[in-house]
Every structure is written in C-alpha cells, then in structure tokens.
Image (cartoon, rainbow, N blue to C red; front, side):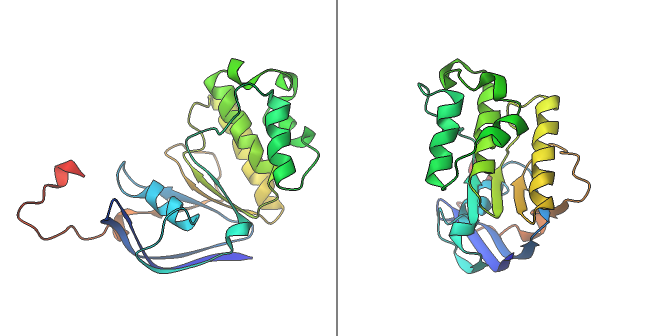
Length: 205
C-alpha cells in the first residue's frame, strides 16, 4: 500500500503556499514534514486528508485508509477515558481498547472523566485513538503538543509498532521523536511564489 503525491499545489485563504510537491509514503515508512511556522505544514496535511481541495496535482490514497489527527484532542469531557476510547473504537468497528490504553499509559486512568485529565493526559488519550482506527496511514499535525519526554517516547514506540505492522505515518513535528528510520521532507523547496503586486506585504501572511 502506498500514498503517492504528484505535483501538488495547495493554498490557505486563497493564497498559494506550496507548489510542485511530489513524494511517496509506503507501508512501514514514516515521513516527517519540517518547515518554519507559516510554511504550510498544516495546510498540506489538511489537503492530503481531504479536508480542503488542492489547487492542482494528484493525491493517490483512498481517504478510508487515512486517519487525521490535528491540535484538538476531540474528547467528550463528561465521558471517562475508557468511554471516549470505546466510542471511537466502535465507530471503526473495533472492540478491544485495552492495548491502546496500555500503549499510552492510560490503563490506571480508564475510569477518570476526560475533563479531569491534565493537558498531557488528554493528548495521550487523543493519540490512543489512532490505535483503534484500523487505518493504514496516520496523518498527524504536531502530535506531541503538551507531552513530556516520557510520553513522547511512548508515542514514538506506538508509531514504531504501527510501522512494524505495515502501517505508515506522515507527521508535522518540531520534536525529534527518536525515529532514526523516519525520512524528513523539508517544505522550503516547495514554497509557492508570492503574488507580484506592489501593494502586497508578506509581513501580513
């Protein structure tokens, strides 16, 4: 299985950010997007996940093979940790949430209401959802936000396990996850040309 991106261009608010981008991600591979704030990482991921249209180019990967994780944890505050995870597992036709709880060190918190969790615990619960989706490709935008070093290591182990089972991951992150096998894709070479307009001021991008 493979995601293939060919000559992709995408925009935010009508302003082109990325153009001429081509790459592939195959089973067992992790690809990390790198670039400064405003370079288009989130826009690219949203485009790949089908949440906004591309300006041009081709994305070859069925949407039902992807799961997308952004900055929001997407939790129901009044539900417990286990209830939140069970909800997402049921949507994806899964039943056993115990491995996901264990993988993100949430077993002892299973009966705690989500609203009582710390920011890091909420993020770990949000990431645990990846393990109950059954999706081949994880598309993740800054997945380690709010995580301490120990939790980042837990997440890296989860990603590595996913890759070992033939899955793939496409992530925008500024953190070194310790995944030496991950490829890095720098966005700078694909920065779209700015409009030629004497009244245009790049400072307001």
